[in-house]
Length: 198
Picture 1 (cartoon, helix red, strand yellow):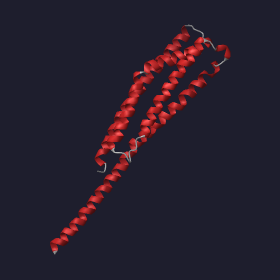
Picture 2: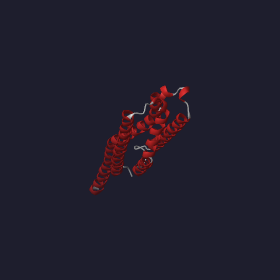
Picture 3: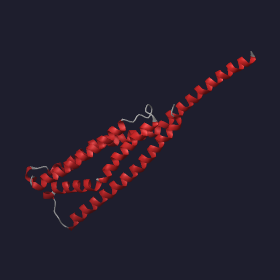
Picture 4: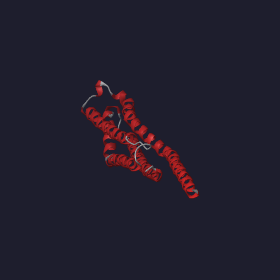
């Protein structure tokens, strides 16, 4: 009788211990999810921001040049180049947002979430491949749109070269930092695997 009671008590404590362990894992998981979730939310915001702000900034910067007397072949080619870059940029940002929107750290298995981050990373890598072409096309487009309003002297040409070089280097540096952040995010998500419920 005493052994049966001990077995029963042992079984109850074992059950309580299992429940406590599950609760502990759940609490740790909820705490650990906050940091990667915050990073995911920032990436989503940046994607939406890129879709909205790019066209607005370009329109505000170039709107004084949109006059009937400025319209010629250079102006039209410049508008086509600039529009093509904006469409490409919006497409990349939209694809990135869609990839990030599919990540639900609280509900999805950790491996699936990490796979979706890898998807986002591959979208960003593909945009990195075409970064130089996109920069040249946008710069050429803006230059052609503003052609009639520019006075080409040494100072102006030097100023444009410096702006273009700075923008190019700044964009490449930003992409490199983003890639490093994505690697850290992927690692943080994979670290959650230990606390995932079976």
